[in-house]
Length: 281
Image 1 (cartoon, rainbow, N blue to C red):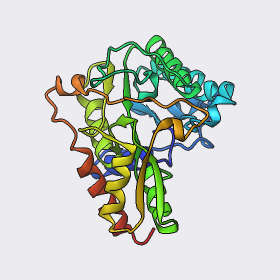
Image 2 (image 1 turned 30 degrees about the vertical axis):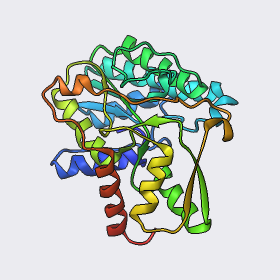
Image 3 (image 1 turned 135 degrees about the vertical axis):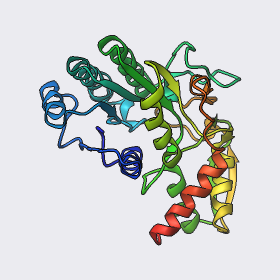
Image 4 (image 1 turned 60 degrees about the vertical axis):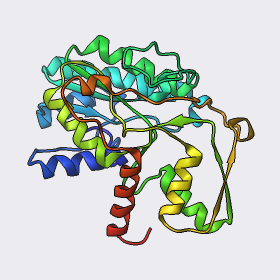
């Protein structure tokens, strides 16, 4: 697993160990994916059956001014990982994002829908997908959305922090997506590695919501007094364009005979319960 410790990477390692798998994680300092020789050495040392690449430039707004840096990791690095996997004759699983789409859809987006990213982050992630497809025949590209888990940083923890600091929180109400808990994504991704033929897959929690309704659910679940006020995207401008609608249809996953991932509300409940079990935030 490349890209540990991260929200998804940490849960993947834990879930793999729970399943009795031998999991090995590499941080960006232990394996810089922009260094092809370093990637090849890591694969030669571990001799894995597959590599999951979760390493990425994920600072969406910063990518607008540092697109070359984001491209180096999200595209060039992804291609180097894929090439190293192909050379070693192993499967490459690459984690991607809903940001490869432009957000103009009005129904859940299928895996073969045309990509049309509107941000630097989205462009670099799309270039990474292209590189993986070109350089490793045995690839799995897994797009997910609105990811949160473990100790963050993520939207859930941000809302809980703001609700403890402020009587009122303004949250965008005109962007639609599917919040996805890493605790549900991790086992599904490991299952996909086992049963999925090469190709592109969408893996998200089921259902659809807005950032505003997600925030209301988070704060209500904790019984916090802060009021959540809906605003528009135009009222909260950011450097990078956000998709207005990025609900991903998990059709390819279902066609494998697998059950849909749980509803996003169940993901939130489970995540909050895991935080409670771990102690005060």
